[in-house]
Image (tube, rainbow, N blue to C red; front, side):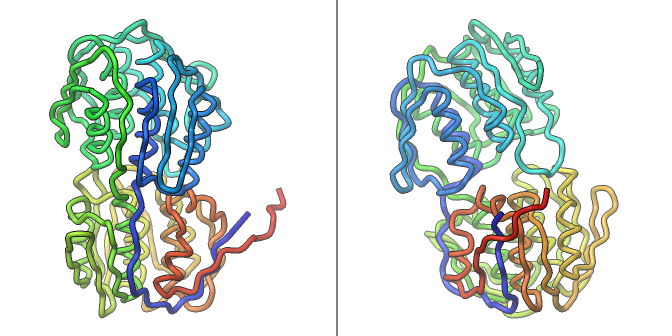
Length: 422
């Protein structure tokens, strides 16, 4: 088990490069199953989740080759249709292979996914949507099993703009017979990236970037080459880090148009945000002011940045209310943040944060990707040394996290911790 050891007191300054988006590239890799032949993806981040998805595709009979930030996926005429538990349990995004396998093979058997411990993320909308498309779909012995000789287009309405459900139904519908409409669809930039990838493969999709997608099914798709869009959550993480440490950081590759809500909150906290053609700069010259945040589906404040803004409020001037509307178990992170001296009280969906001048270093544990990153950032503004255990969570979503922090002036190192007793 590895950990990050963080010495407090650093002011981050300099430039950091944003990698390709985790939440996009994993879906692009799964979508490659829709076309026989070689698909090439560029700007692929070197993160643990990409390795897990690569292994899953290999087990489905694909060839996967990586060279730097480029991944080439060779899909056979008929890939395997079963995704085993030992891989799927490690990463929620594995469920994304469900739609492509059902569309290509007429059947799919995918183990129920695992991933971050941030709350229940049911598959009811996935199953109901696939059934309306003409599939038989049910959960059997820990697997989601679906069958359909060929899917048929239909009208779909999502009770909630779920990214996962939108992706699954979109990926199934592109090869269905007829037209499918998905109303109340998710609008995240990662989903737009997936739609543009599918269009390059020959899919016919209208309403991209809106809450209504119209998909005209085609007989077959062709492999393509596609550049992954920049990771807005990684970019947002660096932006918050600059504010926390009263630093001055240029986030190269970050897109302001994907982070308008989050960056507006940082301006309210006292930061200066300067857009540029190739990224944006964030500078903070004083103690941040407390900011209220309500997480919502895009274009609202991203739930994946909620732990970072909670850490920011922990050292801000004043009191803030943070409301979590997407994942109910995000508050697991609060217990660790309070170990660093933060004053946080939770009640249902709400957390009240009373800012303190300084936190104090302590051993803490990362329970998911974003909480882990937020704890490392909190350690940068804590007196003494903070140890963030279970570093592998951070590896799932951030390429070279510790190395980038060191480049910006932080005192962070990675080391092996004691093995667990049980």
